[in-house]
Image (tube, rainbow, N blue to C red; front, side, top):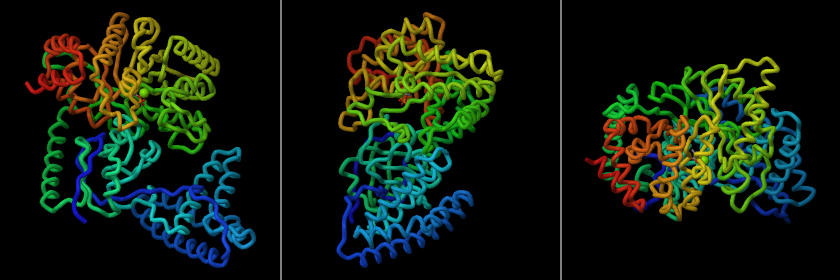
Amino acid sequence: MTSTIIKGLGVSEGIRMGKAYVYAPLKLGDRAERKTDAPEAELKRLHQAKARCLEELEELIGQTRQKLGEEKAAILKGQVSFLNDPTFFPPMEQLIRKEGWSAETAVTRVALQIAGIFEKMDNAYMQERAADIKDVGSRLLAQVLEHSGARLSDIRDEVVLVADDLTPSDTVQLDRSLVQGFITRIGGKTSHTAILAQSLGIAAVLGVGGGLDEIRNGDLVILDGSTGECLVRPEETVRQQYIRLMEAERADRERLAAFAARPAATADGFRVEIAANIGTPAEAEGLIAKGAEAVGLYRTEFLFMGSSTMPGEQLQFEAYRAAAQSMEGRPVVIRTLDIGGDKELPYLELEKEMNPFLGYRAIRLCLDRQELLRTQLRAVLRASAFGNLKIMFPMISGLGEWRQAKAIYTEVRAQLEAEGVPMADKVELGIMVEIPSVAVLAHSFAKEVDFFSIGTNDLVQYTVAVDRMNEKVSYLYDYFHPAVIRLIKNVIDAANAHGKWAGMCGSMAGDRLAAPLLLGLGLHEWSMSPGSLHKVKETIAGCSRADCVKLTEEILELETPEEIRAALTAFLDK
Ligand code: PEP
Ligand code: MG
């Protein structure tokens, strides 16, 4: 087949090359139920599928043991036991023989029924087994249907992952030593899948649409996570050219690494705090060496999404303590659970909504199901004794919500005090500014909160009415929209007027083009994906604060995002 180029949104930078691994998952219940007139033939299909499954598992167990260790291999061994369990396979045979169901229906019915029993058990360990049963059930189903659909957990070589869509929970599970990059049919610039790709350092191009059909399993693919270009089956000369570009990229990274050890300051000595966004405590390890002075946003929802049941207080406590300890006394801003929008938690059994980003999300959900928030606050407060933790509430839309959240915090703290639990004397409480109503009312909030953190990812979607997930309207999604910039200015001014600090944890903070403007506006803390730290520090070091203030005054007079981008580009190119 000839080579071709497809284009999408470059959401996580890096040029990567590798064999395509086309991921087309098959889920239990995807297929309509079917009866059969030939049960013997169906039984044969079932038995052959089981035999292939066992062969596949045996091979995978060997590879897993070698690459990932015995513990991970044991999970797959558990699948072999399920396949051979008298409560798993024989009931499938019965459904075919006695009731005349097809092999795929028999597999689906039995696997879902057994998983359902485990799900209802009042024990987290047993509930987690439900996911294992579904997993082995869908593995068997794929064999029955001779479905070529791959499984993320089966990736064992270096690949470029190609999929219609990847959920944030798929993305957190990716093994970054194997998955070089990924390309998806749908997805927006600041979807959580994109954000996770950035924090894991995986190059990603989303929203390539129909172009995805050009890629076959095993094709050589090159993707450029900045430009959004993907080259499928490139010619040898093009391949060589990209190998050179990858080498140049590596040299650039090495040059920028020198900025890790330097403080973030402008040429005329204006100092700002540079922080990193994380999704798991493991990401906090080594952050100080990379040059982060704080964690400006710990998206705790990924802890909840990485588990098939609700993480309890102890597990959360250990995660928050680990992040606090890795940062060795530097600030760690823990954001309370921000579920909803594009982040689902199946075990909460939330209803499907027409407009999930405008619906039952984040603090709204937590103020309704307060036990969630109370447990999380207990865990954070217990962990506060081990470092410098701050708490931030997401999706605040009015003073009432903030006051209610703060009141709950005060109650939880009093309870822990009564129990004699050690805690930090002072834990700062702040809010995300990601809804325009709060940015407009920032002066009222600034009297009460300890800090603000501006979430441009949502602030843009709510201010400009543009779905952050939808690639069709992504041309409108721009944090350089003058309306967004005025809101940001209002927040920073309000913080300054009341002696509070204002940070930014949305993607704008990690864009070097925005740096002169954010310096001019006087943003105190900048929190970004770790991959952007060095480049932003380099840009700040190359600016003079006095020039940035002057530029910002001019920018505030401009009326379109294009004019603002042009002014910033010209400034940085000088
Ligand atoms: C934001 O909205 O800018 C933000 C940082 O939060 P999230 O991307 O997790 O919604
Ligand atoms: Mg947000």
